[in-house]
Image (cartoon, rainbow, N blue to C red; front, side):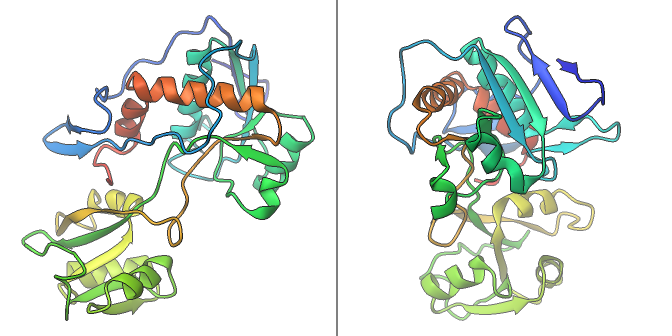
Length: 290
């Protein structure tokens, strides 16, 4: 990896750059994998888009762009170096395709137009699929989703299902998609709305509610904090519904750039098949949230 003169806004790798080492073993994607003393489920994301290429010449170079305010997917460390899941994923895709690679940081609201205007090849950031973006961009297969998860007290035996939560008090963030999902599908539960995540978590840790329902990724990080202090645990499995929760993260190319999109899809498919996506997941989400 070589940084540019300003030290942080761009990195590049050549076709001969070595693969990254480190990370935990995650080659058995879609099964439960051991990480330390706990069992972690590594999610399996199948291709959500058609047109996956298995043959053809990959591009010699991929110019990625992103914004740098999306931890843990992309952020800066104490020395202002770019870090994160998306940074490593871009690097791994290029390695799998034997393509040279660069990543440049620009303001988030300029990402779509920069690719549409041909100044970059692909956006690896949290750009959503909307009618406006779909006029300019085509999206790869999904490489990450954000499920809703229930958290309960560490000694609780509650199994959160629609038929088991009747009369149970469930903390949610007021006005959130998780509150809407709970009220739609868990009609017998009692939603207890709080102004923010911290207040909802505090209510659970003090046993003022029976469970909390929220974003699985954010809850996984909270469960490992000193603030949580081992008070709580995940219960039940992940809840995924694009109508309520994020449709997931995908890489975007210029609409109509089939060669680049197919190459990126091929890279993602290879990384899923050889276990590298699993390794990245365990590297950045050691507790897991699926």
